[in-house]
Amino acid sequence: MASSSSSPSVLPSLTSTLSSSKPSIPFSFKGFTKRVNNSGQILKAQTLEFSGSFFEGGFGGGNADEPPTTPWSGISAVEDKEEPQCPPGLRPYETMVVLRPDMSEDERLALTQKYEELLVAGGGMYVEVFNRGVIPLAYSIRRKNKAGETNTYLDGIYLLFTYFTKPESIVALEATLVTDDDVIRSSTFKIRKRKY
Image 1 (tube, rainbow, N blue to C red):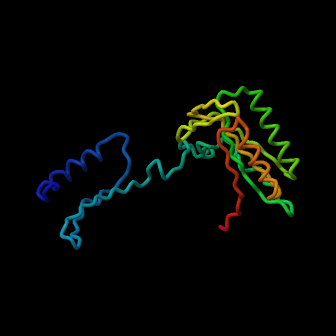
Image 2 (cartoon, rainbow, N blue to C red; image 1 turned 45 degrees about the horizontal axis):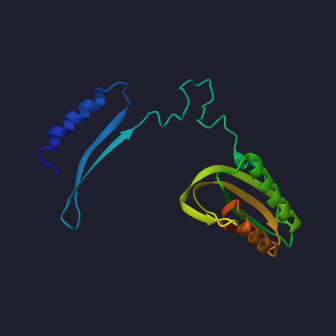
Image 3 (cartoon, rainbow, N blue to C red; image 1 turned 90 degrees about the vertical axis):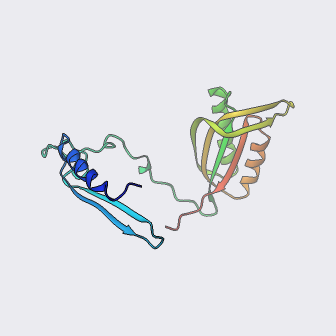
């Protein structure tokens, strides 16, 4: 920690450096304040105020005639779509499925269609599938297929199914997912409404 005698010499040089830099930004320098806390340690703090700086004017280029632009002005919100209401007797669920990374696009589409049909046959409604693509796994997963071959996977194709269905149909879905050789890992969750 610097001694108190060196603080005055640092203060003028810091002030002159900040005030002479280009482009100039108006600021006020509050200096160092010393406080001694209960343990006897000396705390030093420095405060700078930047009034009229870039951050106060927003993101615009400074022209008063043009409306200010934000970095996200050209991007439409994904959350604009209204979610359907859950029909009576059904509950909202999410199923995350991790598929083998070496599957072709046609195999993946056929598997997605198979599980969509299984959900609808079990009484499911509003089935949506979101393909997150190939993502590295947090840890390697060893999986043995029906032929007895063992494979270790380091990444997988993530699919997220969201749907409304009867609680009884989840058992059939999970049993099918567990026995499928193309599925590395899966988990189903009941979606609970947020209270806030």
